[in-house]
Length: 198
Image 1 (cartoon, rainbow, N blue to C red):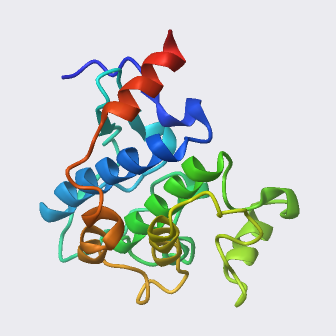
Image 2 (image 1 turned 45 degrees about the horizontal axis):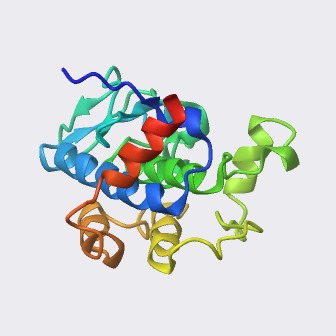
Image 3 (image 1 turned 60 degrees about the vertical axis):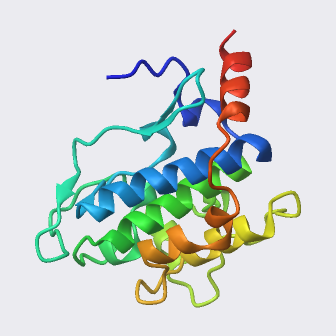
């Protein structure tokens, strides 16, 4: 087991683009590896993504992960704030549910705050209602001018309420954002983490 001396990504809040890009591509590659073996993580969030001073980015906390059995899992697990709409409605957990959680996670890393604007939602049920509003837009009023266009495209396609329109894991791995950033240069992550913990 590797020592992840940088801790989890939730401690860093908003990541600079130079760090965000290689970190997100690493997360995508790690998730793709899981999904290739038909394993769903079921609790993707910034506190379950670890980094170290070598620039490694690792997915952690497989306490609720599950081997896919006929592509669905029916147990109700995961952190509710990152839970996909189909799970909120009591539907089965699929890889597309992981993709929703991934989308919220990387959106949070890019913006420095949880993307579902809880300040306008008085409680969890109001937040859920906002997600199911026909005008739901994950980017809302956030300033995304500083983010690469192909990265914003990833966010918009991962956080779609209708799971049938959400990107599949093959789409995620084959998108221009990933293709343009492989091989992954982890030096910016290593420098950022080293500076942050020293």
